[in-house]
Length: 371
Image 1 (tube, rainbow, N blue to C red):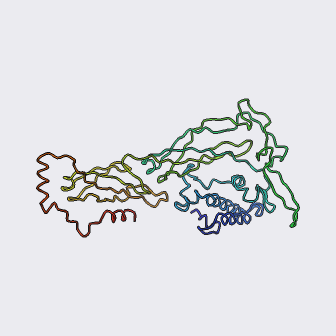
Image 2: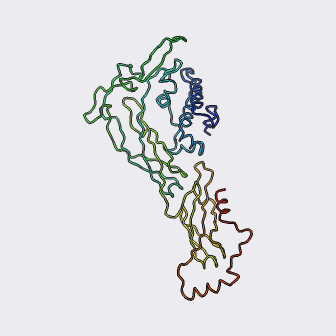
Image 3: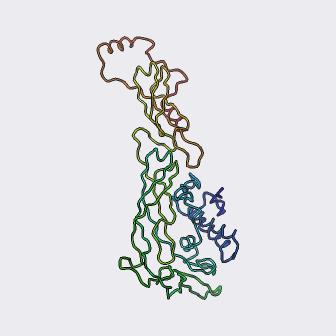
């Protein structure tokens, strides 16, 4: 089971952005590979701290994590999810700024002094889902136009940084000689520059190509949620790693059903006769039609709750309910015989409203619905 991000950084849920940043820096220094050479557990702790900081330092991601936990970011890359796919190159390329511009306390932006690998830019797309697809989960195939390295492009080691992707600077301070690192201005951190490229490639040796990407979307996602498909963004020059494909979910409106979190609402209209005599009605549900029985004398405004017929929880805690709102339809025109019948009923005691003590008011029903 994945460890809680707040526990990893040793902070509370109310921690400020500065406290989150400070806690991550402390953990990163403690478990940095340069301080713990050959220690696999320290490296795992280093990665876990970076994953935690990636989410908690972003207000939108943090809000989703607080509401849905780890499940908020899973399911977007064929099972690996938003997390779990980070490697050391991801961490050094994305979080080097936390260490003051590429290095801190003598530690560089790479593990064991190896070359820093640049990550390509991310791509973003929007995927529209029907309510049925949201309820059941779906695999979508989308066409993405992404940059890839052109066939035949050749790179050479950057002469400025000697392939490291960074340039080191040593300054004398009151505490002694301090070393810091920054991205190489010549190669942009790639460690390589172009030696030759095809005529159709851009300045970085890239061409645009269409690719069909398969996206597994779990049941229970919400409108505006973002999933990540690792390594399906733009390629990076040389031996860099590809960026990611960020998938934003857009939920389409259903013709009959209205979503409220994990619950669904359905307005059922019945005739006066059906309300008096009772009826069997077929209603729309997210997984097909459902038949329900209405008791004799059912009142307009009655809410019937169908357990488990709503949207599955993203955290796999079951499903919401389908709430059926009963509305008695009043005819606007009557025949002569119909009017005579209702005129007689005006003085019939059986037709005069006699709400029972247990009957709830409209406001009580609304309160129950949201409790």
